[in-house]
Image 1 (tube, one colour):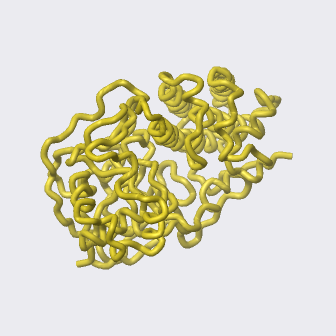
Image 2: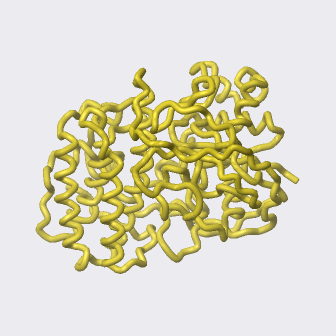
Image 3: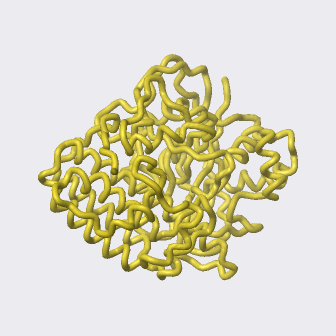
Length: 424
């Protein structure tokens, strides 16, 4: 028997059902827009175990709403197809057995069109139920919207990894990427906040459970770079033998470089890089992306600096507009671009996820929610590092200063970059 869910540790939604319905519809529509140019074959293929087929993302997010919003809170609701729960559950142990993640690319059926029909069925059921849902279920709708936004970014990065494996170098979108800025913005050091500062979500809107509880932490004097590291600066690191100098690397990082033959960011080939618009010339002024934590740490060592802690980053981002910068607004070939800006702290939100030196661990007093939704974040707090700030593929409106992303130190298929820090 499937378990009941409890969202008690997820911040309750403050939106009325009408506004929630609009946001739900817009989020679901964007997901369909992202796959509008894909064939069924494009949407069914899986390029590696860490990635998932595009249609799986469409299906999993639909399973999430059907399971947590419709199944228990809506009387007499019946699943569209009982078999789909096994196929499209991701990692929720409380929801029973599931299809193995590395084998998602073997699911040629249901087709992409079948998934679209299921989505339409669930969308109608959710919109019909919204006016009468209890507050706990409305909170799960809010969670589902943010969950789908996360999968929109994953869908894009998984597609990029998939298309990059094709020797033809196909484009997902035959469209120009963001316009290049011809000149570097000079990197400056900006002194950060020191002393006792409050970190974590302060309330007043949605947040994932891992963003709290809010608490105080002590920051020593430090400075942050005014912008993320650029492609041109990374090219200097390569030219100086950065990938061939073991003293710059953590032991695990050097072993990874040797084992994988890494000598540049993912998707680089000489002076070109693969993008969602196909092969493009590398823009020296744009933020470097698709680098691992190991690479970010080695570059910081080479530069005589370090990675910021997640709390140094959050203290600097407090008060800035999290909806600013280069973020996802519509389907298209997103790629980080330079701004030409010369403000103190540039591109804190959007462009590239910024690796921090902080392990992904629970905050003091953290408690995961009981039931299946409690598996959303807490059980992954082992062996991963925190990234902050979002990327060009993060849907606008999804981010906050307290937002914590996390990946294993070798992973780099996301739009990941870095901002330097130093002690002063």
